Length: 443
Image (cartoon, rainbow, N blue to C red; front, side, top):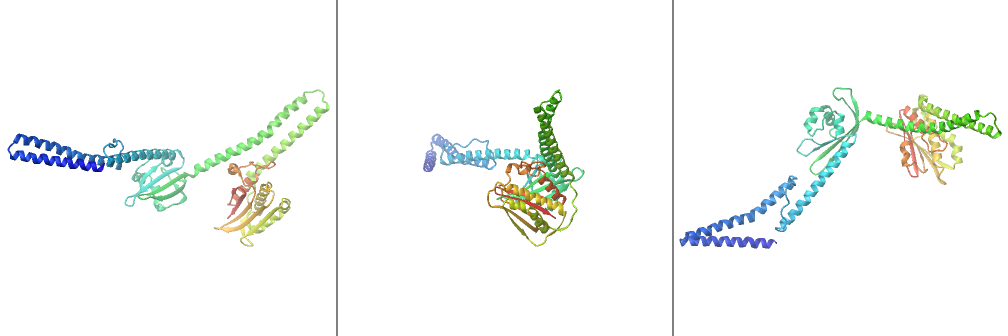
């Protein structure tokens, strides 16, 4: 196709030059009218030759300028002219499709970020520019009770305290809490997390902000909801059969004479009611233990000796279940300020749970205990190679009265967690198939 374009150009140049020579010759011979006619033809061919050369470049320039400015409202250049225009037309259509796909993705991301409760602010800057707001979601604006700004200067003007905090951390990646006063009201605590990423031309700084109070309220509501489900389930399981049995007793009371079977049924009904009542009393007593356990009487005590004492207490049960115990301590003595009785209660409870978890394992039952110091804290790890805790119930193990054991009360882990928190510590766990580790942490 390129050689045909060159041939057309040569033919046009030869034709224009020939007509121009003819025009000059006729003018020299004083054939003015004929010379004028040829001159008009030369002008017409000159204009056509100009359009033939320049207009394609104009179309190319318009197309490339539109692509450069993300303006795809123009019609694609004609693809039938030559290979160059065909390639340019294909490129234009490809860029147009990519542009609208990017717009769709950006719209999806924007809607997604606006649908979450976490406040998100994304800043962007190049090497020779200051920060600009790349994106601010609606939750971020709602936290600070302001419009969704697109200008960094407006953010500095209307949220100076927050911008000052960003300057204090030097726009680095951090994860911390911060207190901010909004509209001169009482300070509120927020969880701040930032991240930074660099691309070829830009640097992006992402800020995520959550109200600590909102997080706590959500967790409290969920915990209360889960607790009420367990309590209502337990009460219904107890009161429903009692109600049924009471109706049966009313039937017996209306009978003038009783035979031997009636007396037997009456006695069994009373025994069942008594059992259910005792079970409910135990349930209430367990709840009382959760809410009214004694405050820790902290004294300096050796955790190594305490763990060894607990293992000695549990030794008959461990031997009965053929469980091998491995114990390791960083030092011979590791002291901490604790309530020895309550701490023993937590360790024995965790050991009991490990023994139960190992019952489904036929051989090679193992429990490992470790005591060590790290970052000014003392840690006690209790690890077993049981089946592990199913993913579906991992977020429920500390809920009061939740249990997977047939005869379990469901307060052991909840009470243990409360005891550890009363020691200004915490109780956590990690689990996967074939392994569960509970970690006690003391100051």
